[in-house]
Image: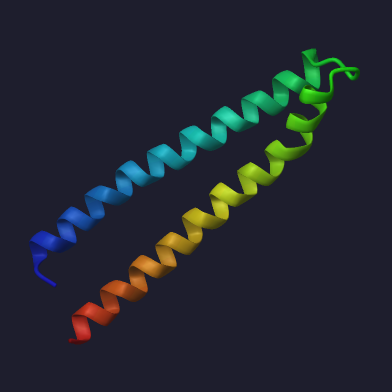
Length: 80
């Protein structure tokens, strides 16, 4: 892999990290809003409050898995 390709790849991680953090912050703020101002009688709000933590976990797991896959792909390309 050339130095230019490595530099482009590192630049992509800056944007990936920013997108991941913003998605997680948005979901955590929704959880906080529903916990404080949400009503227990509204079925949609209850379902959202129950599912948002799974969404946060899914985003974080995808971020970690993407990093591992990207590193493995780079190592595979550098060997050939």
